[in-house]
Image (cartoon, rainbow, N blue to C red; front, side, top):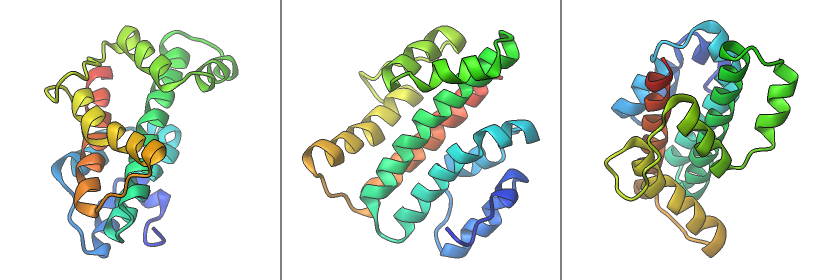
Length: 176
């Protein structure tokens, strides 16, 4: 992770730096890095994106469990920031008030808000939606690690990271 500067990621040059660790980005990860965030968006999302990049890095160095947990955490943070920005920019709520409200929400509350704010399809019964893929490939594994001490290999965590990147990209496209 030392190879990456957040300034480089903000300027969409993180892709080049990340290739130094010998792993290739998959299309969802690469598309997310160049998805058209403006500079102000990157400021808001940089901590969330850092979690996804850290998940990618953990995976590259063999810590699959940490990679899965970080990629799941990235989604929760991403949904929080997205809701915050919508409340502030679209609904003209005070930033501090909106931030306090959003920070109190659980993942299920964030999903419910995403349904109403921008129409996220949160069907987790199959892997036909971006959310369903993330739920099956990342969130279930995260729960297995936390509640049952599951141990995964990097080949297991790579789909989790891809699903997180794909869900983030889907949310970006839906909100735009």
